[in-house]
Amino acid sequence: MPQLTVVVPTYRRPDLLRIALGSLCAQTYTDFVVLVCDNANDSEVKRLVGELEDSRFTYVGRPENIGLMRNAVEGFGAARTPFAAKLDDDDTWHPEFLARVMPPLLADDQLVLAFSDMRFVGPAGEHLDGAQERIDASKQLAHVPAGLIRPLAPYAIRGVVPLNATVFRRDLVDWNAVPEDTATAFDLHIVLELCGHDAAGHHVAERLVDYRLHPDADTSTGLVRQLCGSSSALAHALASGAYEGVADVESARAVLNVRLARAAIASQERDIARKASREALRDRPSLEAARLVVLAHLPGVVARRIVAVRGQRYRRTHPDVRGQRVA
Image (cartoon, rainbow, N blue to C red; front, side, top):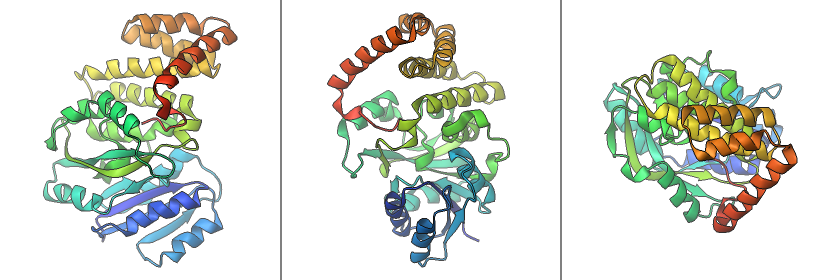
């Protein structure tokens, strides 16, 4: 039996999917199988998988669109290998990715996962140096040790462990109990479920995954939903008891709720904005959180204009963030 199942969720992006699957075919580590889970049940995608003429690749067409989360989660649930990983249809793995992350897992059964760093690229695969620098700084990537990490919890909370660049032990996640309210942030829920308590992992400090930032990505088109899901994932982690004593959880949720409040004000989703701003102020009192509480209770047009002006100022000084996925 193969050691690893790679789940590739996809929906109406055959051109990008072709590139993603090509990166799987190019892996120097070959003991894996692939489930291409197609939420559009598209004959073109089925044909694309068949044209690979590789028995490791299986096409799974969904009769109806079951949503991004369920498409991926049901793929993981259907897997029968000890290890699993997810490759989104708009991302790619470098040829040596699996060859670098699998050996530590196979050598040490105490490790729950192994992961590498990511490189952020634009729609055509161009390097986004400005975005890379800011995201690395926000996650304090320079301070993440290479090799064995124990405990993983503080790093998982900071978003240092991206599911897109991780291989993990599949049986450590209850695939029948992934909360629906994590929505498109189910990736974070899975990582947090893996990394709780005193879990150990292995960090390959190399950029072996290209994470594509583009306007059509779900995390660009559904920002409020993504942030709501992330907030829920952190709330579930807190409630599970697996992060007891990890101070960063509440702080991370407060920062996330500030982002959520801003996005919800901009999209005029006032109930979400009010709830998120209140929770941010409760968990981590700050002038910014207080300001957002006030904005969330102003007439929608006024609040949106204020947020829009601030956003325009930010984009003028950070021109490469437009239309990007949220990392």
